[in-house]
Image (cartoon, rainbow, N blue to C red; front, side, top):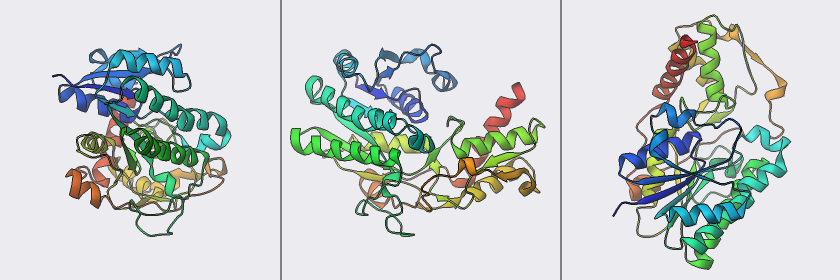
Length: 325
């Protein structure tokens, strides 16, 4: 029988890559889409899958619409990827972030419990939940969680609610604690895409400066297209569990800049960088590095794209986009 998957956040980076991955596996894919005056389908269109997805109207803040969407999809698998996902904005819009990212997860869990109780449920948890817990230590599934932003706190709430619905109602729920994962489909407000786009503009003579915040922050950066495969693999197991998805290697924002300018053929890159206090976080998360040994041993998952390959992919994609303009 044809498997049916329901994805919230399908118009985002992860949702688009996941939808393509599932379509290639023969799934019928349904996506929850908010009503907007200007629909945000560019990622699905770029991957050439917009017309292969059945879009269902709904919003994580509206429980009735979620119930109707789950009833219509009758999914075998549900992937909850929707969130207010920009960490910087979460301080300015803490209530909205909580309503969408935290409370919205309860609403979709309720919809699955009531209308598709046999479905397997994936919750997009985040490495931001660790905060600075454990200092420079590599994080694993047993590391204490100590979030340092409204976004991370909301994700932690959603994470534990997914665990609770597994324990309380017997739902098959898995939480993927994903470390930073990027791509050419990443939103322009995220630092990695801001860098790749900015470097491309400087290379093409469309800009002369790239304004950034903290250059010393280190992250465990991987390719989003690899990470959605781990999401799927979690729901193919006989028993639900939580897994870290990461590369196990860290690089600083400065490292990302240096590599991006290298791809563009610019050696004297430091002269193009300025630091702007507006992009500094009220509470900085200094280093995030994760161990995905559990995912490797149980799911058979390992990342395919390395750091240099990721940066190259992103810069070259932005050079192509901007050259067309």
